[in-house]
Amino acid sequence: MITLLLGLFIILYAISSIDLQKYDSYTAALGSVFGKENELTDFEDSNLGITDRFNGMRTWKATVNELIEINGLSDGVELIETDKGLTLRIMDKILFNSGEAELNENAKVVLKQIAQVLSELPNEIRIEGHSDNVPISTPEYPTNWHLSVARATNTAHFLLNIEGITPDKLSIAGFAAYEPIKPNDTEEGRAKNRRVDIVILKQQQ
Image (cartoon, rainbow, N blue to C red):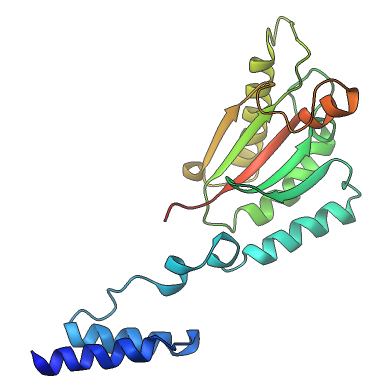
């Protein structure tokens, strides 16, 4: 028992100044002391933040920002980091005609490119529909709730059935006018609030 404890303390002291390249050898040694090799929690997954935790996350951000720039979409698409995770914010004019929820042809081109990099991420993805506060009342969309949910649904449907995003990591939500990012008292503000957010959710620790 004394020998085991001594070995443990020596390994713990060594780990206090560990670098990532030596981590595997230390975990193997610690596993050997307790006879449970390879059962330790992965260091990278348990200690780094969302941006660094997943291989390719920074590459994904860079790729999406490049797509935005190449396609001249900087006035209608932006990538931001929020408490929820990484959010790709797409103004409704990029995806839909006014008052409609069917994706236009331009939307399909944009989403197709985005889907190629979304599919490589392990995170859950939530598609959120948002509207301004101007009431809508049509036979198809009696309220902004109906419109925001329909837009989120059609975006998710395209990513799922056309682009093959894994269904078990995709969800939708409709917020109508109740999560504005700008005041609704100007046309410019209302235009910013009419959007679809593709949220790459932070994974639970």
